[in-house]
Structures are given as C-alpha cells and as structure tokens.
Image (cartoon, rainbow, N blue to C red; front, top):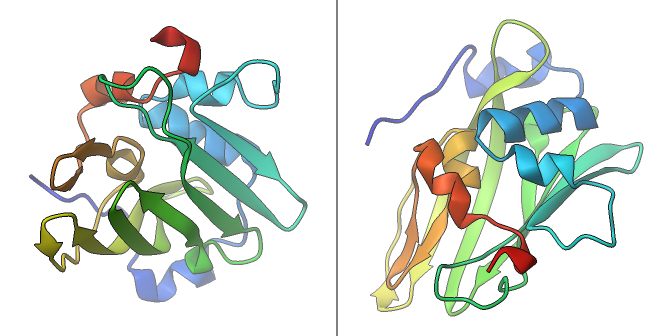
Length: 171
C-alpha cells in the first residue's frame, strides 16, 4: 500500500497554510469520494454518516461508522477539529470504535494553493486481539475510508470503499 504525501513537509506546513474553511473541508471529502456526506451537511432531519461545521474558530468534521453487517451506523467514531489559524495543529479529539482505540495527531500537508492536499497522521492503534503499535502516514482519502475489521482497522485510498460510509437509512 503506497502512502501519499504531497507538497511541503510537516515542519513548514503551518507557515504555508493560514486557515481552512467549510468549503475546503467539503472539497477534501469530495476528493476522497465522500461527496454525499458534504451534500447532507447542515440537514439535521436527514441522518448521515458525517457532517462539517464551522464555529468561527475552526472546522469540525464528524464521521459515524457503518459496516455491511450493521442495521444502523455505530455512532460517532471520531471528531476531527481543524483550527482555522493553524491547520498543522489539527487533532483528532475523540476516537473509538467497539473495543479498539485509536489516537491520532493530524498535520495537514499543503499542495500548491490554499486547499490541503494530504494529511499526515501518526496513528497509535490498540487492536482487539492484543496490543499493537503502528505509526503510519496517511492521506485524507485513507482517513475517510477507514473501515472496521475483526482485528482493527483497514486503511485504503480506494474510492470503491467510500460506499462503506453510508447513511443510516441506506441499509
């Protein structure tokens, strides 16, 4: 599996990006093959697998986790908060799924232009069947197409996996 990092290094990412908006977050979701999430953002009457909000100080991306065997989505999997003032300081502030625990420290790697092209994530994964450490750099596409497996998580940049993130009433 190839890892993709585009543009600057993490060390100078903060100097090159001054902020991120909801439109940027939507663009990143759509690039990852998850346009339906952004299309449904802001519609509380329509259950979706995620949403984007902007509190004026940063952008928050919330994802809910679904599996083929689930009748409903399994609740909030993580909340990513990306400060407007320094995208490189973005952090996953909540993350859990069943008996697996994930902690992530996110840094955005900018492309030429204002929209971040990739996200480098240091991931510590405690797998259900014993402790395991794994430090991996992943793109936003990897992050947003994470699906659960028996022993943890599968990271993939294949857009075909986007259908595993689906609305509650699609089941």
